[in-house]
Length: 224
Length: 98
Image (tube, rainbow over all chains, first blue to last red; front, side):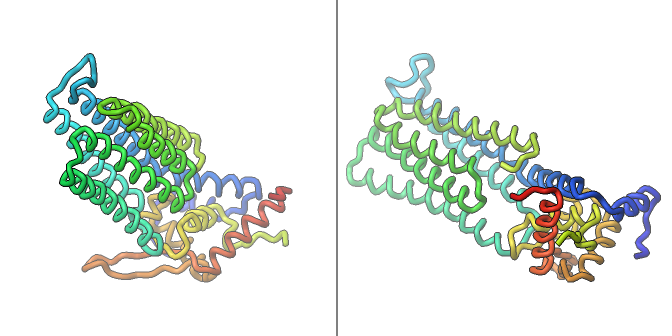
């Protein structure tokens, strides 16, 4: 082909065409797969870290907002609720932006799976919210609702991590989903407002650990 | 079964094939994104894509998104199978029975 090249390109082209021994060929495939994984998945540890911070700080704020919660810091409930809301919305926005970057330039069959997965997050979150309104109308106390919302949302999030694990064959997501579900159903047994502390430590903590583990795996060049 | 497919058995085309094989079957990737994942020059990439295309291992589809031309690249079924055969042959040559 007569595409114009500078010298270094031309010499690289020549080197590219030279035969290679089988061990080097296999190593090259593995190296390339690791490079692609690192480039495509490098945003995911950030997504997990952002969720870890949002859950950790957000639930700590809620815990500090209720009477009988945080003994060292007390926030007005409206402030605590606002902090929680802002952190959660920021996490949703940043993970949506980073998530779109992961699959940029790729079209086709997997687009449907990704779209269903994204839709499931919205459907699940809205369902939890609407159900809560129904319970409130039927006289559920503020205390009961403060147990219901984190637990139900955590259950939805955990199941979606299971779905992500199935879609992308990711053991990391499977483990994370299991821990999130366990935290969500254990937390209410501690009663309000301690359930928020449990969500902050177990839920937020496991996001942070998962993000760190995945970051290290990607740096070692192994597909997580 | 110890002959390595010469179409794939060259560093650049090996890396291209591996990258395209890492996509889900039925997915295609834009030329610039593929170039980015491979860190190759456009000229170099098109040269090797041409060779893969001639062997019917790769399909290059030129289309438009609005007024901007977009080029999508994907492995054909034949190309995916050739790459799998190639890696199997490599493993058997290296005495790996896995």
